[in-house]
Length: 230
Image (cartoon, rainbow, N blue to C red):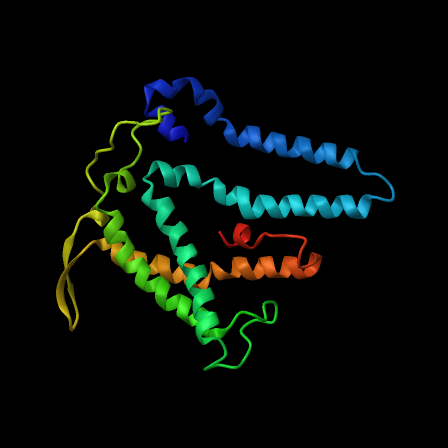
């Protein structure tokens, strides 16, 4: 964000804030920590410490990841929407693969924390996510709104259209593959397979973590599955 503001004269008035954001956040964290310690009361210490630990977990799960959202968005909406949709496709396809084929081929439980999760659901999600991760970038690459980085921060309902020289990964290229020969593809389609593999093998564990939380605190007490998953 600081680099973006330095490159745009209209945003120079916020440079003092952006160039010191780490110091400001660090100071605020310790201020809240000191206040939290000062509010500890006998008889409530166990409860208060558990709440403090939850705050730290939330920081690790949400804030650390959100720190990079601004960079992703300013580099182009593609870098936000594509990974986001991969997780959605993985989650949805795991559900439908599970209810359709679950425990029909593999009877062994997939995970003790989530007895409803099946190997068929997990494997089916991998297959559908990989297919989606290959074809979806080719669709998004055709729209400048997705692949062009931001050239300003606009607060009007209809900002001017984006235009840019596309990143080479969004330019169709003739790629020579072993055995099958040359094919014209967007290089991002091949990169997308790596994203799809990550979304298939890593992202589901956010849901498993949410299942552990629900079992620890009661099935109906929390609805954090999507929150942790994304």
